Image (cartoon, rainbow, N blue to C red; front, top):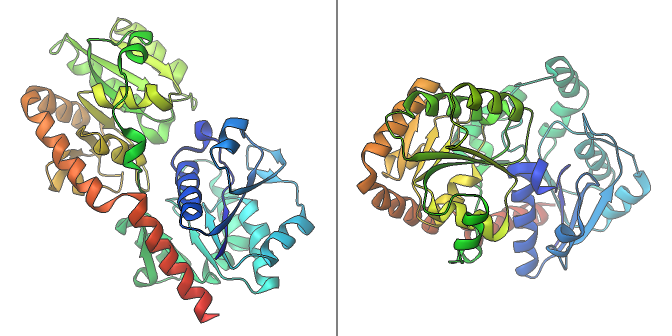
Length: 378
């Protein structure tokens, strides 16, 4: 098949889980012998990122207004790309790149699938603009799709507001590639971050309100005196909260025990996961957290909120699930720290779940089945 993947951000720093999902899907589709084109914006694209997609045709449209990811409308280029492919996979919802591809798909009668990855809810900033977007473009884009993808079972219900029955939505969760988390030399990365030999709780993600790092820090401050040897590590780029977090850290005199290490990747990222007591995901809203899978694949348990789309973590004993409130997060942290001898067993249970159900080898085959059904129907 000739497959077109579309996402506004491929940059791993700013794109988060949506960028990671598109990147992994493109690589794995290529490995299965399919021709893959990836259409995105030029925001944050590096030579390293391009090289990591060797064999995939990456096309970057200039972004003329980053606040809303308004792209320069290279209509002839987009139309030519769409005309030459068999099926389209759109990531996200609130962006004009999807709309540009949508019109090309309609003209050339190409089937497209949409995976909003949690973006269907009216949440966050620019609510009026989002409603206007749906009235003018969004509703039509969703209703005319060949099929709909949810990252978690809970996300299916979000389609109802757009006139799409949840029963019509296929759940294709995020995945992970276990071989990328094989054992590495942990010594140097941890030493460079001042964490060698220290017990720490890990946060991995953007320092943005939706991810809840402020809730996690408030929770940690409330229990820090009870667990004086435990550190807290925030690994991720600033999404607007770093200055606020640093102020709270100073006010509670926790500079020596709270580490903001910035965006981490590669060997350093694997090392941080492997040596953490547990991963904390205090998100206020999230479709399905990829970092759950990354922690799980190396056998690290997780404390997460019930807004992460992964309540099964609690059901199988791979961690704890709490509400996105500082006091409940603090309670969950205390439970896990007081049961430290049980943490390895919890991690093994989560690892078994991830390796059984959430690898990209499994997910890509499910995507291909869906794409092939639309091509046959056309």
